[in-house]
Image (cartoon, rainbow, N blue to C red; front, side):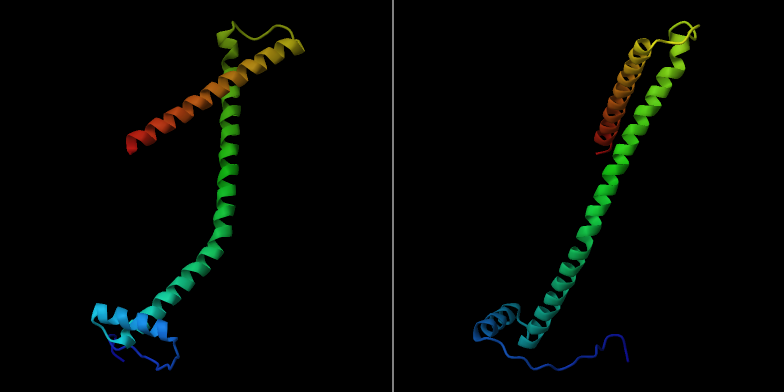
Length: 139
């Protein structure tokens, strides 16, 4: 069968008078046969049903993907914070005059820990600002 010939099936239906009148009016406005207008209406309806079914299926997937994206972003933020703290602690001997000769007290360690967290937070803020400025430059 050639490509341009489409197999069709005949179907008899009953329509309310108001629906028939609307279809007839649309057909006259478009200068097409009533049967063509009915065929188009059925095709549009079926496409709408398919989109509706797809959206019902995709909605839970989209929610799961958004949840996954949020978790990944939170994990990345924690990773950047940990890297910032590790960087701060690794440079500590060079910035504070060497390694300590005796164990740090809990209070002294807590001060260093808080300083490292503050450094990591500032580092993370700067990374976000750099990312925003890159996106603005690209737009």
